[in-house]
Length: 362
Image (cartoon, rainbow, N blue to C red; front, side, top):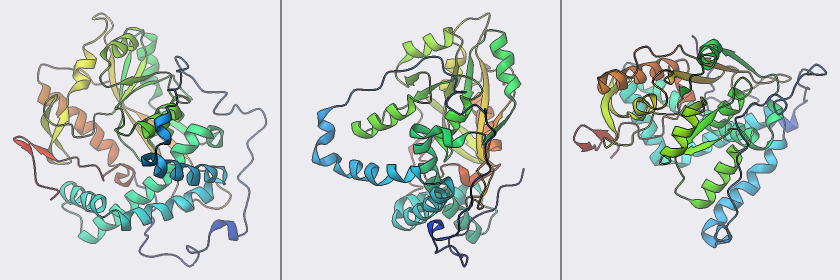
């Protein structure tokens, strides 16, 4: 499957320096009357309560986060085409300013794509940051302005979830950290209700923002440390989104190849697949979320997103945890390769080796 047109920040077009607000605008195609909005079509298992506000959030150490949100939130009421333009500019700015993240991204891409010329990997790295800049706006809109994405999504493989649910089996949906992360959850909820696993953020204010934003998307958010809630959701037959594509070391993982490089791979999905009823065990499958339209959204067009759900993994889990981790990595790698620049390569995916932390990123 061919990746969409790549935006090259190093070769700006004649119009790239002109904000869309200064150009003649065109309206997006009209949505037929009576079409259900994203909100009207939203499916969820429950409506979670928001986390309460804490007065410590107003301490000076958090003022930077407040300022960032005060700047960003009004922008989500601009047309999506303008948001994409701003997202590209934001991504390019971060690529130039965040030296360590840029270096980590280039190292990861060199490890994963050694056959590509250095210039091509640099272009890919820039596009990763461009997609993430757009992803910031996509995520904020998913939280606070979801109906802007009405009639922008298609799906393939939905029958795999429907079949499992018809058999009253829970589903472990293996996702990945794509740049449109939370928008992917919103779009999934147009077809089936979904709970999600999450890791608490180190900053309490940032965690408060993210958790409360996601209450508008997911039926239930399950902390990675809350096994009781996880078991409850599995026994209730829910679809649970879990992303096993980051490096958390080897305390709960094994070394398995990922893009041809041995990587610490968490094996929690094996343990999750063993929970619940033996007669109706969880079905494990993978999810890919993908923006098919180019980042320089044409005038008068809405973006289009596609969701892909793979068939259930047969004989999973097996008796070999390394083989299982390898299978999961192979599935995720195949999906990421549809457009590698829509995956978050700036994470230190290969920071652990068989003997502990490596010096790859030094």
